[in-house]
Length: 118
Image 1 (cartoon, rainbow, N blue to C red):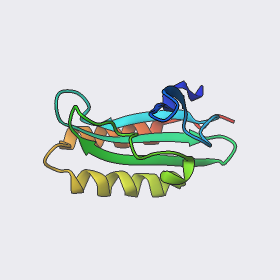
Image 2 (cartoon, rainbow, N blue to C red):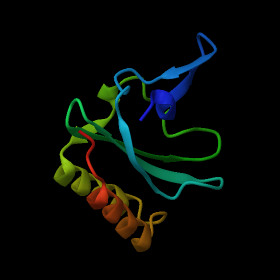
Image 3 (cartoon, rainbow, N blue to C red):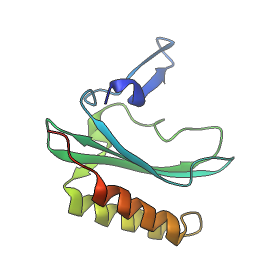
């Protein structure tokens, strides 16, 4: 994955740039209920160099973005696939009012079917 997927706007420099430490990350998926005024997202990436998954879950409205508070890879949770599946389940339970069972199951399938790049 190119770091464009993790670009964010820097209000100090008025430029877009990558989140530090995410240059080799591959997108696994944006799980949840993006779209509309309200959103609940659980964004998942895989780093071939670290051989780990990285994820961040958040929710909000049209006035903010899932990446607003992220400045480096240290702002993401990380672990192996089993830890990721547990985190996704926990996030889905915490947001059961927006993440339906079908959303949860689709996320599990996405995580399980992801082929880790070498």
